[in-house]
Image (cartoon, rainbow, N blue to C red; front, side):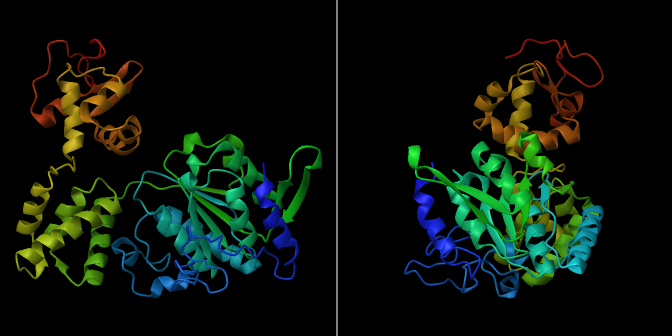
Length: 392
């Protein structure tokens, strides 16, 4: 299974003085350490091709990265989580130990990746970034793990999408700081144990329930990120305005925040689009009129519902309010089942516009009222419309 890793193992054993394998072109940060000619890219560590958190102070081309906070104190919102992380960081630094393994859970866009980079910044260590879908087999991890130095952070986004074999391969790395590599096959097969430097695995997931119980239990710190209140989103907008060099009026900031579904990523995306509109209209700031015009053009209503949210509710209402199966809804709106379940349904559930039943999804009376639709004759109960209707 690990025949191709023979070269890795030999390189590792021949470089014991460095404590890691010289893996040549194998890079972290999704090959972000080398350019096409084999040279190091700017903003990466010259020895290992890993992202150094201090390089984030350089001007960034990407909008979201440029707006990321530079310290835990600068991070807005998630107060309880920030306090817990600050205690963990201070304690680890006082003992001169790596942080315990961390797992961040929660919907997309709440700051899981930003927190991982901030932890590396606070610990004065480097961060190696990858994602669950990018690691298809255990051999993909060997290069990353053997190149980590003491205290480095390995950040895996969408960690719930790791194949089960890769999950199990991480068990010994997380607990024993060692991995077992099988060399050759058949009667000549042998196992080689590679010892690793103590490191911190930081995982981010939107589907905590898909993690195997033994894997989840190996994380010493498990934190869940919650949706942001409007006041925190306004603070994020004000900070972004200063960095972007364009003012956002207070009433416009409140309007944007109230339609952002409690997600900072949505807030900043809306601000970016409204900034474009203000620029085209030759305005020095994003005022309320510009804000309302831009949000209306984007098809976002007063509760933050987008066109697909309304299409989903209309699909239910056209079928008497439900129940309607998830596959049927996905076919009606032209989206995948996973996208509906992970991206759109949670917000509708929080608003009380949607209910999940054993027979399918059901539109609530609040959904009918919001869309101005007439309740069907079979609507019963306080919360559900068409609870005993036929599933589509």
